[in-house]
Structure formats: C-alpha cells, structure tokens
Image (cartoon, rainbow, N blue to C red; front, side):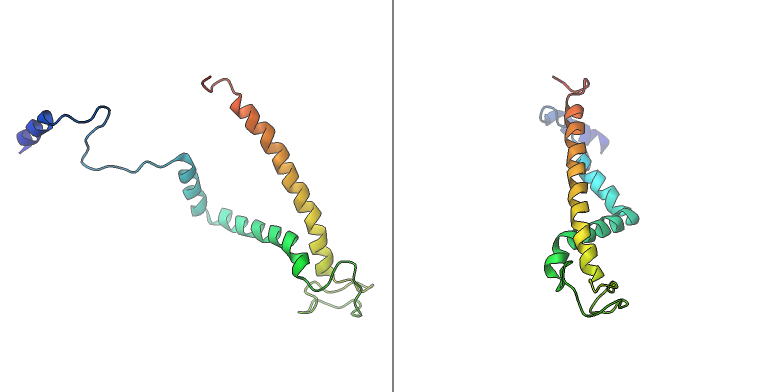
Length: 133
C-alpha cells in the first residue's frame, strides 16, 4: 500500500511551493494568538472589564445622573443610600456626582498621555534598522 501512494504521489505533480500533507493546520496571526492568550488570563480580562466600566462611568455617568456636581441638595451629611450612592457632604453636594465629574478630566488626561506615548514609540519602532527598506 505504501508503494501505491508513492506512485500516485510521483505521477501527480503538486503545485509549486505547496506541500501535500495528510492534514493541514490553520495559520494564526500574531494578533489572534495574543488575543487568545489574553482571553485565557482571567485577571487580565477582569481588569479590562473594570477599566471599561471606569471609562463609561467617567464619560456617561454625569449625563445619566440626576444631580450635577454644582447642585446643592437638602440632604446634609447623609450616609450612602440609593438616592445618593456615595452619600452627601456637609454642604449638601452629592458625592457620586462630584466623583463622576472629577473622573472625566483624569480619563481624558490618561487617554492623551496614552496617545502621546504610543505615537512616538510606534514611529521609532517603524524606523528601526532591522526593518527592510
């Protein structure tokens, strides 16, 4: 039986550059392998979820919340309740509104810093000597 397979393999010329195999393996890109490895790391995925929630809280939270950071309430020095999840301070400001307002500039600054660090490092990476010219 082995001889028959050798004879048929010799008579049928494979395409140039193509190797005949019993089974094939699907080629994976480096991005797909990195994504698969990241998704298997539970702590990393949980951290990504927390990060996304913080970003949503920073940008969407103030628009959805009933109080603004400048609005006084009649509830002075209240502990956390459903009406005020973080409570209120001695002047009547809702602490949830204050925190969500304060979170926004820090998120914008962090994003700007990310972009500022990524662009020069990417440019220097692309200009590296090992890349073909």
